[in-house]
Length: 187
Image (cartoon, rainbow, N blue to C red; front, top):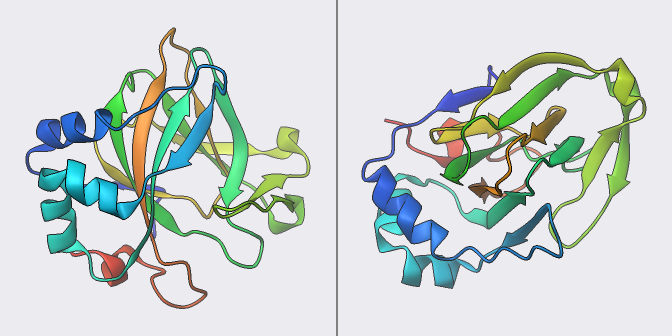
């Protein structure tokens, strides 16, 4: 992917938002959090979405996840994946309270990146020195976008409401599925 993000048109977008938002479980005790949903549930509960998505996908999907950012919350700068195997992109779909919230993208040299954690989902990298980051651009995610996850990025929600988005991630492999065109029919 040459750019930080690429907008995508989804027919029946508002109907798809309604299907997906019905699956959301906000746990206010966890505040900013994410959780995956099994594909069987997505297929069963979101027929408009899965009909569209499955007609476009070219490779297996690895994960369906909700990301919930608390009111006035932030998700610090990070890269999805490890230094050796990064998640190149995701299809992010805004669901609720996404106006005036931003995904920030940073220039971060490799020598300023360290592995942070490994969990059941994927793992991540963070900057050794977050003060050395240079913001390159930011995106108000008010439409569906493919967004870069393999570069340093963060989230800001300056609003008094929970920001909710949904993401789709494809197979994670060192050489396969590294471009949108390999995994998804954009036409």
